[in-house]
Length: 318
Image (cartoon, rainbow, N blue to C red):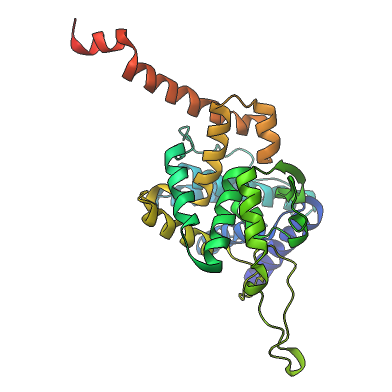
């Protein structure tokens, strides 16, 4: 009975997040996984979300630490269950919030990883040398990622209508269904035009009513035969990992998020202002964008240590 109640409470919470806060399917899936893990811990301790105490929450957080989860992951789990308990309190399922006095795990500041401009060029050249229609699709996706700094979920879910008329700007729908305009570079527009010439080849045939050979339709810019109807994040990740190997770039250094970080870091290094970068990245809070200034500062310190004559004198012991 308690298990069924917990499941229904989690479902009610997710419905609220979707309806009131516009949470995406990816966000909802992450919340569900985190809360189901939390619920399993409570069940093992003979508790449930309605009667859980702060000691239960502390025990769960200790379990995460013992399991070797990174502080960032622990903090995300705690954030999820805090949101959940706030919902339970607001909707009258309980008269307190057992997570309110739990401190977040200490996190060291992790600077975003990014590629050099030379490494980006090698990826783009390798993609441009790919033959056939898959090569055109790959080049368009890499150029779009690097030209706009989109999140990978935003890229794979781009609607066809957003790019159908050779746009100079793309309308991107980000977290919370918020829309933003991002400019396209000339190389990205060229790659996109070439891809659009062959896009229909990726649309599955319409097999309804026995018409196996009838051309299908898709509302996505990057359609796929999978159940989502579009290329998935996992598929694109594999594509660029394979591309990295071909380009002579260590695949461990390459991911869709690294391309996003590279876009931001390179723009900032070449004089872009933080506010503009914030808008292009779709950050709701500029403090999130400011992490890239630390990347730039760290790189500049390294350059000074490597090339400044006084730094060299210090190293030589004079």
